[in-house]
Amino acid sequence: MRPKLATKILLLVLAVLALACASNTMAVVSSRELRRLLETTVTANLASVRAAEELEIALLEQRGLVAAYVLDERNPVWLQELQEIEPRLAHCLEQARKTATTADERKILDRLGVAYRQYDSNRDRAIALCEQGKLAEATSVLLHDVQEAYRQVFYECEKFIAENDRSVNVAVASARRQVQFMTVAVSSLAAVTVVLSGSLLWLFFRGILHPLRRMVAE
Image (cartoon, rainbow, N blue to C red; front, top):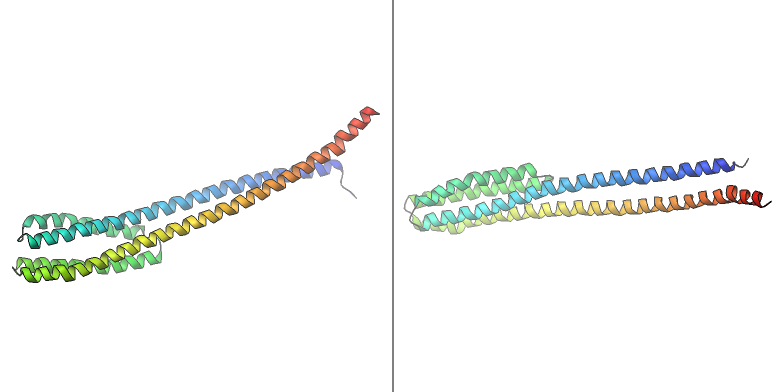
C-alpha cells in the first residue's frame, strides 16, 4: 500500500527538521570542543614556555653575577644580587613542573632539575674557591664546570620549549582535522536538507497545487 500524500509530506518535513537540528547540534558541540581544546592548549603551553624562558634568563643573569664576583675581587654586591635571583630560579622551575602536561615534558624537567643541581653545586664551588683566595682555580671552575653545567641546563630548557611547541602543533593539527570533518559533515547535511526540501516542494506542487489548479480550470 502506497503512503498517502499527507504522510509523505509529513515525513519529509520531519526529516528536514531532524537534519536541521542535527546540523545545529554538531556545530555547537564542535565549537565548544574546539574552544576547550585551544584554550587548554594555549593556557598550559604558554605558561610552560614562559616559565622555561624566564628560567633561561635567570640562569644567564646568575652566571653573569658569579663571573662578576670572581673577577671583581669578591665584591659582596654581586653575591647579594645573586641571592635575590635564586628564589626566582626555583619558582620558574616549579612553575614549569606545574604546567607540564605530557610524560615527555616531565622527563625533560627531571633531567633539567638534575642539571640545575649540578650547575648550582659547581657555582657554589667557584664562589667558595674565590672566597678562599684561589682565584685561578675559581676561574677555571667557572670557565669549565659551571659553563658546562649551564649549557646542559640551557639545552634542557630548549628541549622543554620545543616539546611544548610540538604539543601546540599536535593540538592545532587535531583542531584543524576536526574543523575539516565538521565542515564536510555540515555541508553534507545541508546538501541532504536541500534535496529533501526540494522533494517536499515538488510533492506540494504536484500533489496539491497542480490538482487545485486543474480543479479551478475545470
